[in-house]
Figure (cartoon, rainbow, N blue to C red):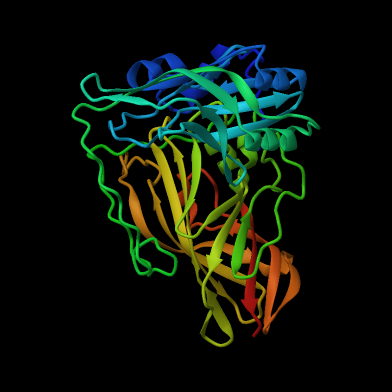
Length: 438
């Protein structure tokens, strides 16, 4: 997905100036801070163990994105937040990366499972993969407020080995024991048992097919001021993926694609892809993109939405509704959070264009009149336009046509959603969508 060689020297002065000039409050970085407050998973690799031998024999190095860290003999994955004593899983900060030459496979969204057979998993592409298995059973001490696992053996799974093998084009790499593992999780005081969250019903907000009901939003007393995306990254930008970089869209779905937009490898691209790279830039270490409520992530630049039943409006016009929410978060940058959901396409009678209305949550850009804007949640009409004449039309059967890769453009109405950092007219990805014929 992205490439960042942490072994390459970084100009600290330039990095600091870039962050300060962009208006960011510098976050606490490094594994030590997170480890001191919440604990960590520490893997000590042993050269004699088969998993470690296999990695080194394939010339695969392991690195990490802060606040995680990794060296040749030690990987440290800090615990995120302060879990409860009965937690069955906890999130881990940072990212774990397997590198060979100019290629890398990066596992994001790291998570520690604390069941009878502990594991560490992560997301690569659209799949969650178990990366490590840990022997032993965690010990919970409510008095000491800890969950610990000592004297454990850590092993690379065959599923992780397959993912690394495929991403790095390595012919041979198998799983196996890497070395020892120590887990320390510091839990919250009192640490009450947490109730299980009920599953949403079909008509619950956020469930597939649910009506457009804005969620309840708690407005902070002093809302964050969202900074501009930086003009230049403080370290190397992600590497472009090969094109074509999206998969065929199945019937009943719509894909929103940004991978082939120009300038996507740097923050200055001024398009949807550069926004995604801004959120996921490895140097930040905590950006995430989360699809929910029927949306799915096919790749970092390819979102899949569930299409609903088309509804005729006007003379030969049609509205194609969708379910699915995509949430962008970058906590270290003033708590930035944006989500967009329930995209409705109003397609004109000639089937040459569409206007896209959405539900969104965002914080508008500060102005002199409103220096501390509050977050906004609600509908945004005509947030994007789609040019169907740029698409490749394909018969879809049942009196419908699939428009493959139709260019989308950000409108003036949609600018505020993306922290006001992109101008109206900016290329905002492309859609593959099926529309009833007139």
